[in-house]
Amino acid sequence: MSQFAYLFERFPSSGQTFCYREVAELARQGIAPPIFSIRNPKDEPPQELDPRIVERVRYLPEEKELLHDVRRASKSGKLAAEIITAIDEWGRRPDFLRLYQAVYVGLRLREIGIHHVHAHFAGMAARTAFWIHKFFRITFSLTAHANDIFAPRDFAIGLDKLVNAARVIVTETDYAERFLQERFPERANRVHRVYNGLDLAEFSRSDFSSAPPLVVAVGRLITKKGFADLIRACGLLAERGKAFRCEIIGEGSLENELREQIGHFGLRNRVALPGAKSQWEVRQRLAASNVFVLPSVIDPEGGMDNLPTVIMEAMATGLPVISTVIGGIPEMVIESETGFLVQPGDAVALAGAIEKVIDDRSLAQRLGEAGYERAQKLFSIEENVRELCGLINAGRGD
Image (cartoon, rainbow, N blue to C red; front, side, top):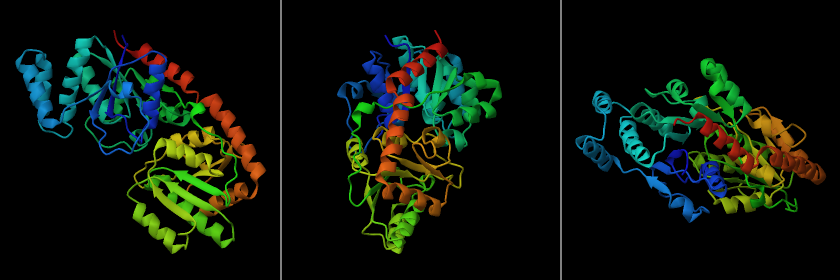
């Protein structure tokens, strides 16, 4: 029997492939925690999923059925008086469903003898885990990622309460680990860095044969990804007479704005927005390219990248990576060794870095090979998941 359970806001999600990879690697190692998902991932792009993992996911009911289930449990005497009181006192205040979801999951964890739950993101799932802990004395841990710690939303159960109550807080980079330890010094010993992992065998290696050179970027079309800067950089490269193509793979709220920008710079024959792609298609496009670019910035709300999984994937493909000095990115991309780093928002420097690698194939190959070796060293999913499992089990309750 597994010693803990997972709780996700949405699983599996094409935008959170690191979560699925983690669960899949645990299964490969013979560990199969129960999986609870608050939301059903409807209308997701096609993904390569193991049906044995998908079958393990228990989806929570929608609001009406959820409230009915909890009321039925209350009438049958399954809930302690303090749980009923807490729910009544909370009433219909914002986030009230987290209490009901906690009861729903907590009762089922109690039935199967699970005493610890691990949540991804310091968000909805972690807030539900907080109440599971309060109601059932089931301990919890969480993996914090990016906006959930750098620009957390304002909830009654905020980041401070989550960090204070969690037995273990895992995050993906040394940068984020220091950020949390400095913000919550009294809980510094509970914060641990574990890099996300990859199975490098899934990735084909680029042979840098694309003509003209192909520049690939992948990410949601939102402000913090900095794709407007990439388009400006492409405009500068076009002015210099450079031959290249650029694909920005993803979907998001800025799509129309970015298309207008592409038209403004006269780049419709050079820069494409092909939309979201499956993981297999992303791997194919990476392998067909010459360089990967992610020009991350800090958005007006303070949101920023921490450890973008796609940078790891580009390194696993043996590509040079051009990015910015944001979050944990400099822990992956080593200046002039595995790629180039520029200041956020500096389209001129970005264009210069791209120009270097598309003009010099041997340089691109050397940087890409060093990136691949770094990915092997840092991002072994087998080792990183084993480390994570050790931390969770060390922090769980019995």
